[in-house]
Length: 400
Image 1 (cartoon, one colour):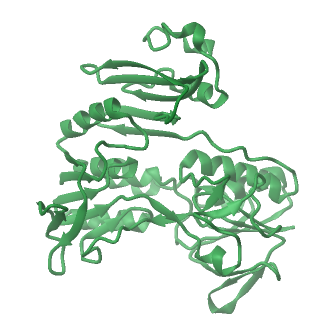
Image 2 (image 1 turned 90 degrees about the horizontal axis):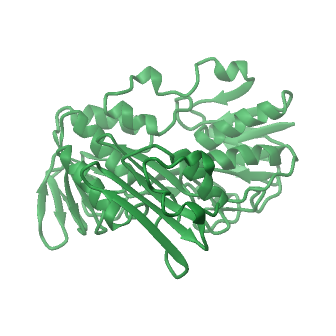
Image 3 (image 1 turned 90 degrees about the vertical axis):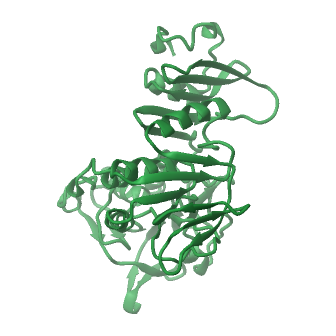
């Protein structure tokens, strides 16, 4: 049996690894558009910050894929998928056959239609080449504006600040991490961010990137200008759908898959940032990992159902751990929110309950109990009996 995987990011690599664990004989071929072996994307932040050397970016040793008998072809992009003939087409009209195909070609940085976005000095961060370009440019361009105050934007802000740059973050919403934090948690995070020397502007819209050929600043809606030598856009990602659409596979906001992670063609599966499952496009590491492990079973004909992934994000800024789990900001009726806020200590804890069951949490300033909380959110454990002591520092989380 010949399995072919498009993409060597997290989903593609973990799927290949799992295929080999499940079946020592199955042929596994991975086509990678980039020229680099798999690297966890969070490592790019530490690389930009100067905290991680180049050789430690990569997840596995150079010979790992050889020992695993996984045929990884770097710098080899798939240009077309031919589902009827079960082939993928490469440059030069070369074709490779498959018995089962996995489309795991991920997502790309989303670039808003801002005037001047094509100027020299405008960057986004998605790949190792992006990271290397940012490091090279920031050496001689020390005033940096980050457009976007989400997870990626704040991580980039911290990284370039550690390289000595002057940094300002501009965010459309009225708080940082609008998808992960509530107002109280976001205010604590902002104070920590600003304590690092990073300026923050909230509730603003970038209208134009200024300059002739090179960036000289940005203009906000209303006419306010911010001087800058470099602009980094962190406005989320968009699934890579062109290849799937050209092949006639069903797409919506992502490549549509069923609970077996099968696309609209029975021999084509998909996993990672490019897919849409039960109406959701996750775009987060835990989901890609879960999907990759699950899809390998189904590619081999061993039925395994993907039930979805509880959203979980962890960020470390200025030594402050920020974790958001599940329904951290619930909408509608029937939810109870319990909080503990200690501003001086930089600690904020919040749990969200539905009918006494734990369905969401925000945990800031401490890691104690977070693994148990994450498992409890996933299992929707009822915590009524501990509700008066649950957020105390002395609480024994092992009871969960």
